[in-house]
Length: 311
Image (cartoon, rainbow, N blue to C red):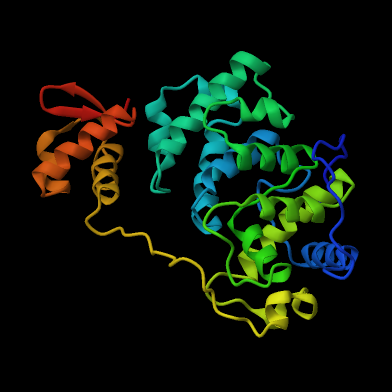
């Protein structure tokens, strides 16, 4: 990833970690050198990537792997290369183009954010964390990630991959807690490089390391640049002993039902008859409940007594 443009530091600098706890400079050097050599070429990285491309990718990458996001991101950027282009189309078009990425409410949130960008910021994705956070559908992580990756701002960016790498390398734990703890954020802030451009590259480098090497199920410690200084490896890679990590159910759930129903409408050229939805999901009570929730979420609209369409 080319070095992002420098910008004023906006993340407070807490006290450095104790010198005997971790060699911060060596940690930075190892991660930045590894990332420079192993970073994947992705359309939302590099000097040609626009802040809008970065923003679209951050919405799409939430709980979705890169390989599934790449083709959908390409379609979106071709259809709607700026926030104004997306804001000008009905929300149903965004839902249709979202395809099978899952969690389709993200498409509605991205459309709402694009509309707000046009109304409040002249169609330009804002650079400041506070302005990003004020947009619909954007929380702490997404605001920090866009500010960091699109504008080189200095922020703590804690996604699943970053949290896992830091939990292992610094904390000596196989996995982090289920939700971000204050102590975890403090450690991440203490490790953040002082220079904004380095901090942005450090953030994406940790993400890449977690995605490609320090994975959840099969970490490739022998290929990790932090193996010799990893607290988890030094402790003998002890197994996680925290609260049970429940696998997310899918088969037969309302989420699966909603996906089937929405897919049946999304894949049609126009409104679909109720019989099409009956064929998509057999359980009538669950089907009706999920149809009502899709309408309430703004993902489907009833356009006739027995017909449904995207909004």
